[in-house]
Length: 227
Image 1: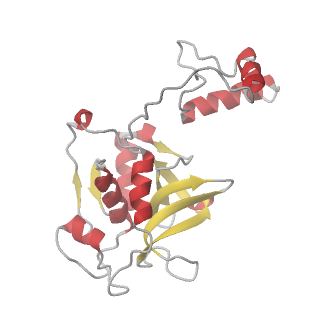
Image 2: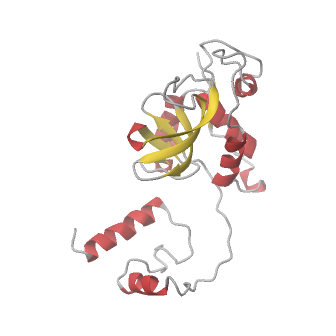
């Protein structure tokens, strides 16, 4: 039976904000790590999670690897669990605004086939993630392959994406567009696609959220007479 516990919150404001890049760097450094011996589930991530060395079929570790990466970065997940479905269920129930159908780097991807990883990048119809307990190629087991590997998979295999509580990266940027982008920015402002007003619309240098992206696309579609 997979063990899980709720993680107590508090004191987060006293710690340095953890960014997606922080977690991804840790995950990338683990690429190639394998179980020893093969097919044993005996791996350092399980030792960390259970507090003792374990092995055998009862100890799959794809979610344990995700938990380990976030803990190493200083951002423990709110539910310490080795179960992919348990983490998704917890976020769906308690923090539904952090569950999405669209991927961003640093998201936790929950696959339809009972597997997980940390999204590194997303492209047209595909996602690339760093995953534990998988295989580097399609010939091996994808859910019990025994190593940390970078995998590019069809986005159709993803059930949902979870966005942990990352901090906001502080940047000092001039709000003046560069010459290469001025014409496009001026057009977008003129047509109401971006406004940067007190109503919470997008400023030129702000990070863009999923909601803002949807609003911008909707405004563009209305301008083109598509909706």
